[in-house]
Length: 78
Image (cartoon, rainbow, N blue to C red; front, top):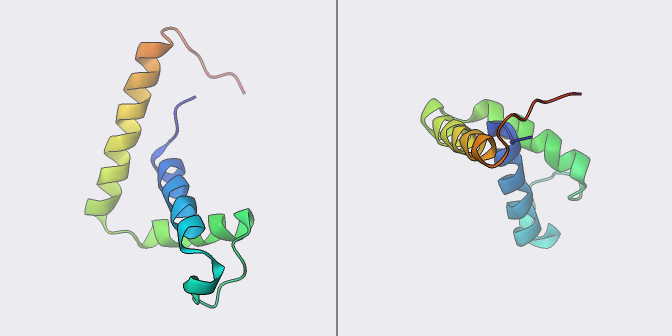
């Protein structure tokens, strides 16, 4: 299943949190636990300007097209 725009954004936020490390962050946030990172990513996502969100939307469309090319006939079945 191809990732949506928020999932791609969250993945990048997680990489950024991991790269910075807890000592340099000093944002007053709890330690970089996956649940906390996801919550923070959601807040950041809602605050993104439309132009920046479009970049992630376009990337999600590319992933969707690439997935359709690799897996023709794929149907998501939850």
